[in-house]
Length: 175
Image (tube, rainbow, N blue to C red; front, side, top):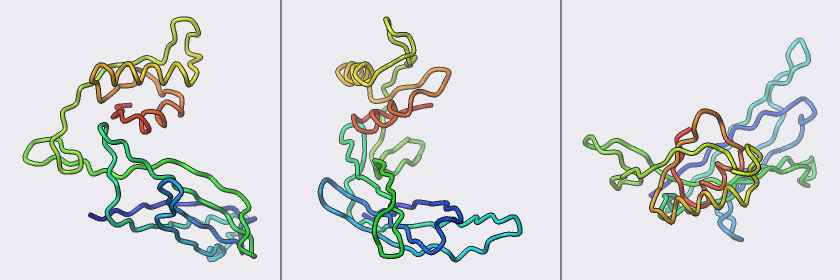
């Protein structure tokens, strides 16, 4: 098995002469990284610097994400100064999975997938739409305890933290 992680980074004129690194971590272990210099895009007549850099990491035998085994990696994008010192970083959890239709069956990572889902409104009985993380986790744990593996976010986008928690705990999301 093999997977590739792509990350597109858009930079401003202030980043000219710097470099950007994409690193993938599994726990405390760095799985792969790539560093690219910035500054190859021309500045246009308005002074804009529309440079986009695409970084890619090849991962051999990645742990695959599913509702039953929600394996996540940490992807970290770092802007480095001319001496290679970090200026700013942004990190996100990512999972590797393959979704396909094979012979009319929905499959995940080569295995038939049975969706057992519920609808969810982002609403707390006492706080209304002001859901805190503890209430979101409580919703997820209730779904998992009742053998649901999917959730449909009803009518509107939920807080970004909801989607991160679904990835961490292993819920397929229909948004």
